[in-house]
Amino acid sequence: MFVRTAEKLVKSRLKDPKSAKFKDTYFTNLNGSSTVCGQVNSKNGFGGFSGYLNFITIIGLEQTILKTDPYDFTKLWREFC
Image (cartoon, rainbow, N blue to C red):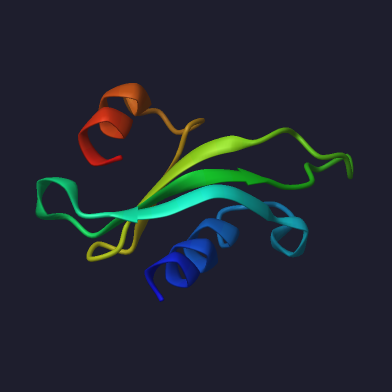
């Protein structure tokens, strides 16, 4: 259930949500936060797949952070995943 919710949130951030392919996706509850971590690949604006990208979805906040977002992603990954 949490994984499906996270995948929907991740897809909402993509240029071509229907092309999304997920792998290594898992649920964790580190630091008391229900979180789904994994990787997603999807088509870019040119129609080609852009390569797998790590993501973190914090379920309670319904927030998805992609590795390309302007955060210290490595720190967040260690903390939540």
